[in-house]
Length: 184
Image 1 (cartoon, rainbow, N blue to C red):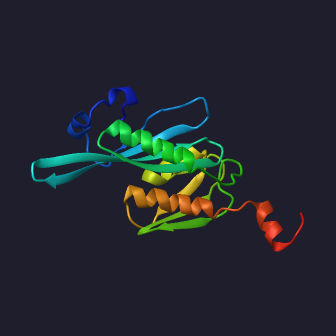
Image 2 (cartoon, rainbow, N blue to C red):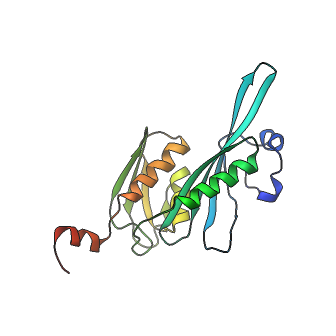
Image 3 (cartoon, one colour):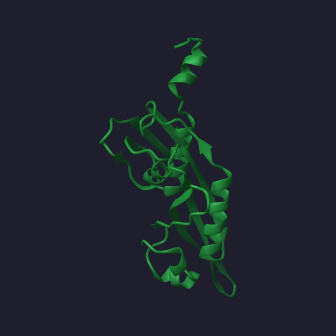
């Protein structure tokens, strides 16, 4: 379900196409270098006396391809509103982590809820061996060579947040040497 933002107009149009929870790739670039890589949209139905009320939530991943990434969750009665809120939240809560030769500096594991993600650095040319939410976060952050494994749930929300948890645990060689009290 790869669509352009301009083509997504109404919630009825979205509900008629694709399955809830599918990832969409959008390019909502501003003057900054940040880029929206993936939007995961879920349709939520509330049954009320007069029928059903539909609302949407969107998980948006934003990154700058230089070790900076953010994730935001937006909820609204329209798809566009959810995407805009998620994008604003993702840009507000961006985090920085160290990169070494387009890979992560060391092996790391992240957890969030039932989600568990394992990541290991890889040599140049390996590529991004990841799936689903992990791939979206790492692409946005600019990681090009890494091995990953989703060990917990396949829920995109928990997987994305487990990936962010793993990235927040990363330390560069200089930081580790400083903590140990050694000079290079």
